Image 1 (cartoon, rainbow, N blue to C red):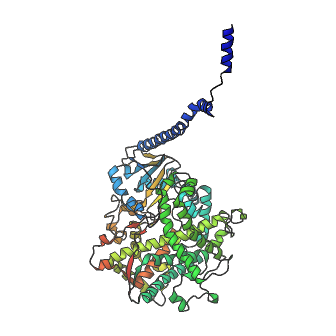
Image 2 (image 1 turned 45 degrees about the vertical axis):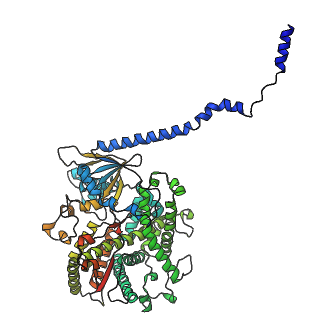
Image 3 (image 1 turned 60 degrees about the horizontal axis):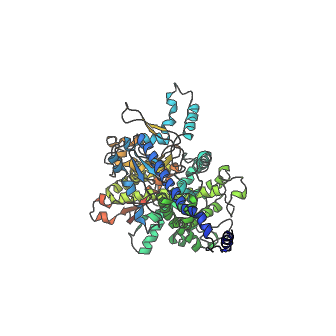
Amino acid sequence: MEAEQMISQGISEIQPIQVPFGYDRVMERFPSILLLPVIPLCIIGLAILYALVRRKYTQRLLESCGLPTLHWRPRFINYRPFEDEQKLASSSITRILPRMQRLGGPYGMYGTVYGISTAVVHVAHPVPAKAIFGSSSVNTSRNSSSRSSSNASKTRRRSSVMHSTGASKAPAYNHFKNFCGEGVFTADGEDWKAKRASVMHCLIKGTNNSLSEASIRLEQEANQSADTFCAQIRQLQMDQQKKEPSSNIVPLLQRATVGLIYRYITHAEPYWLQSESETKNGKKQPKNGSSSFSSSSTTTTTSHSTTSLLQTYMESIIRIRMIILAQSRSIWFLLPRWCYRLFSSLYKDEEETLGPIRSFSKEACNRAKPGSPLANLRQRNSHGGGASNNNAENDGIHKDLLDETITLLFAGQDTSAATLSWTLHLLSVYPEIQTKLAEEIKAVFEEGGITPENPTVGRKTIAKMHYLDAVLKESMRLYPVAPFVVRKLTTDVPVPAENPKEPPVILPAGSIACIWIYGLHRNPEIWDRPDEFRPERWLDPQQKDPGQTNGAYMPFASGPRNCVGQPLAFIVLRTLLSRIISKYEFRDERRWGGEDPSVLRKDMQAGFTVLPNGGVTLTFHER
């Protein structure tokens, strides 16, 4: 007993071993610590597996439609315009047709899995293009036994257009929204319908009537734009001290066309566009000797500051074309917008570039005179008319109105300047066509009594210039300003099979359709010698191509969301080109050195609209 008591007492006196602080806790949680790095790895693995499954499902969905399918990968993370221009080469446009021929899908169509699970259908044939744009749904009434009345027919047509499968752009155009917000170009649904109706009413209404005030003003602005272009050439003659100066015509045309659209939508005179020679000669001098435009919320600025704003606006317009396209080809297009805004240097470049564009557009809003399209648009409910100031910018301009102004100013100058740049480039490379055009213009001008002293050209005059019309059509066929357009398919779209005995090809709802206008205009199946510049194909019935009548020719797109400014472009382009060619001969000195015209043709500069790469440097010879 005593021994047991002693042992028990000894054990009780033994001090416990002191372990390091927290060791017991570590031991208790050791299995959890091992799992900490495993959990995120499992999550990442599951996310990758999910992405692969979704990509495979999307691929099979497109392949089930009979479309050969490729996988798209982002080209880069960030991009700086003019520094990384090789990343946005025009090869992505020019190789579309060869790729379609190689893959051999129905009508040349093929699919792309864009990102993780976005199905994209690429089209360069009029049959599927018309189905996508909703042209087939416009004629849904053809199955009815009769048309009760013209009013009923118009109602059905309007209804089918507004609900056609090709009327949606989101989310394919979401990367434009930081640039032009929710203007008519990017808006969808009821918002788009209301805004398009307002723009048509305020901007386009009456322009098809040669006697209307809107049509007369448009003709005047187009002629004044031609005067601005010619004045710039006179200034070059003085600066270079040459009778036949040389210059890049692209900025000259941009400067002339931005003045045109600015005057047309504001009814205000942009004195900042005048050349020094006009100012010195006392033409169109502003009051009080100021050569600037003012804002309702600011005092009159100096000539230097307004000229600087115009210059930075023009430079920013060129940059934003590249930045927006770059964003759509980068990894940021696949991520949430907040990731792009927070982490991408491309977003910082975009914001810096948009500053002058927004400032210039605000000036236009502030200077718009009563009765002008922009002032009338300001009163419409679709653009903030009668809305509270909660939706307005700091200076009282409603966001919807500012978005629309940015859209109209850009579209009004960029598309016209680009089309005329390509046209003058082609005419300089093919001087025999330019000579034939100049002869037609001279004959029509003489018949209409148009002289250098009275050079104003009207709608009736340009309607007589058939070769001029053919030249412009051929130029826009070869170089459409927008080489592709994108639409979201809201329902399954049946496309008639090439073989009538086979079932139609069903393009799945929810997919994105990319209609390559560049490919449509050069498809060898529907155009004879598609890469050649041949205006005669539009005049000679013997040379007429199927593409002229089967819907393949669509420089302004097609369907309910075609270019809203098409009626304006018809007058502007023809007036400017006839006035310019009547005054000057444009020479490409390389061509006069005996070079082959096909070798001298310019490549396209990347952007969501295309300009001649490197500009177009020509010599001006006064006729």
